[in-house]
Image (tube, rainbow, N blue to C red; front, side, top):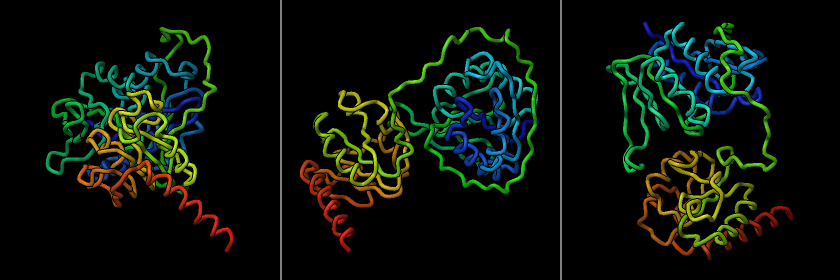
Length: 335
C-alpha cells in the first residue's frame, strides 16, 4: 500500500534550497488531509548533519542517502537513488522543486517507476472525496489553469515552482526520525565525470527573496524606463523586477522576470508599473501581501487585483513617489 508524502530535498554544495522547506510546509498540509506523514529524502555527500533542519521545518522522518557519488548533482546516481527509495518505501506522493535539478531528475524517475508527473505546479490540494492529489498548473500558454490527477498509478508525482508555497515556521523543538539508507550506489553509476565546478562571479539577484519589488511592464517603454523604478526600489530597500515583455525585449535580465515563465514571488509589497496584468504574470505575483498598480488603464486586470490603484503616467508618478518618500524620511530623521 502506498503511503506518506515524500519530498525530494534539493541541496547545492551542502546547503538545502529554500524550495525544499516550502515543499515540506505544503506537504504537511496535504498529509493532514490524508492522515499520513511527511518524509524528507536527503541526498548528498557528508550531508547527514542537515537532516535535523528538515525536521525543524515539519518533516516527521528523514531518509538520508549519504554517498560520495552524490557530492555533485549528476542525473544517473540521483535518479537511481530516488528510484531505490520509491521502490523500497512505496510513497503515495512524491514532490520535487521545479528547479533545473528537479526538472531533470523527476521525469526520469517517473519513467522508471511507470507513473505520471505533473510539472511546474502552482497549486496542490487533496480531493476530499477521492483523496487524490489535485495538481494545478498553467496550460495552453498560461491562458487557463488546469487541475490534473493521477488516478491509476503510484506514486503521484509533481514538481512545484520555487516561491509558490509559503515557508513553514521553523520549530527547533520538533522531533522526528532520521534513517540512513544505503541505495547501493557506486562510482560505476557515474556516466559522466565532473572535471571542475566553476562558480559565477556575477551575483544574480534572487527576486523571490525580496520583501519589496518594483516591477515594470510594457508601459516603461524601454531599458531606460527601468531607471526610475530602480531609484524607487533603492529608496524602499527593494529590488526591481519585470513582466515578460521587458525580458523578451532585452530591456532587463531574465533573472528578474516574474510570471509563469519567470519566477513566482510573494513580497510584502509589489508595485506594478505599466503592467496590464496578463494571467501569465498574475500567476507569478498574485499572492503578494500588498499590491500597488500604477497604470493609465483603470480597467486592466492588474488594477482589479491591486489593493491600491493609481491611474496615470508612471513616468510622472514614480519619480514623484520616490521624492515624496525621500522627503518623508528626511523629515523623520530631524524629529
